[in-house]
Amino acid sequence: MQKLLKRTSQVQKQAARRNRIARSKNASDTRKLLRMQEKVHNRARKELYVSARQAQREDWYLGPLAPRRDVGDKAETYGTVPLRMIENVEKMAGKWKKYGIREGDRVCVVGAHERDKGKIGVVREVREKAESCKVQGINLINIPTPEYMKISGRNEPPVQTTEGPIHLSSVRLVTPLPDPSAGTVRDVIVNELTLTPTGQRYISNYMSPDTGKPHYIPWPPREKPEFKDNDEDTLRIDVEQVTWIPTLLRAPMPSGVIDELRNKYSKFRTRHEDSYIEMKEAQDEEVARKKEELEWGAGTPKEMLTPVQELNRLRRMERKGLEEDRLTEEVLAGIGELMVKRGKRILPKERKEDVDVTSLESPAETRVDAQAP
Image: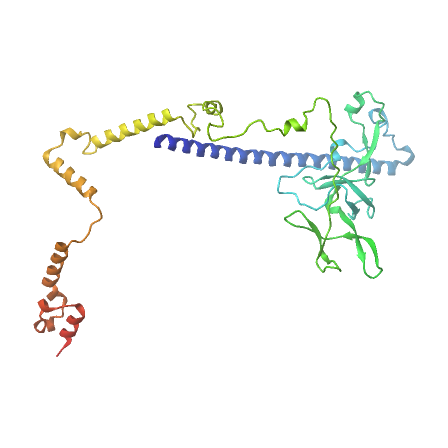
């Protein structure tokens, strides 16, 4: 049985090691994929910028002779931003920063390269892994209508206007704060927002004038989903009805269900039937008995021991069966006699003739008599 338990433990460790290696490989593959996506995204953005600059330079040099570019396939979509360019590439888990911005917050655009710098709007969408957000009515861009919207049969225009993504580092939270000097409440742009481990947020360099503590900013309320009841839905009274009560008089599940959950001869199985355990224990006892029979010499059975080997075996068994070794009175008397005989060797040579070793009572008296003049 111990061999079976050891094999199960070893198999579990090997499976855990394989899973750990697989997770590491998947994480490595994900990092490579994200790096490749970011590289392709940056290359496409660079090509778009380079082509736009070249077209602008040609138009400026040629003037009225500049060619028309809104012809052919681009007759209706010229000047729009490709769909693959409006979304930033997501980062690996743990590599993106939490800015404390959520849908419904009022923010102000402060980025130096943003064309809508200084405008205030409400956040419509936040992508934390890509560190970007979309603000309602800000950073509007034209995009070509996706193909799936054209196939749907609706009369959609070839160009649509939508909000483009803005990096979270380019926006700041706007919150109302009391102004003690004016005695009113006014909107303030929060430059430093700190997040607590419990999920709260507060202004780092501002203390509430009423309490003298950091001013916590509440999160915007989320819209609760509306659920509609249908005729096919299960009633709540049927869901909450108690149909089974556990008891100690019978097992909570049939004994054969373990075979359905885990193969009867699986290496990962840790629970076995009583008959199987008894069989394994009997096998272990048989192995132990054979081992005892062959413990004297290489291949020498117990029945073929010589008289001397049998005597030594009996003595060893007697020594194993004894309790803790204790000093009996006979052993102590023998130790005392031996100490008296060897006492002359312990004392200094110049004081041997002055000491009667047989009359010593304690080591302290021996030292005193030996030092007496």
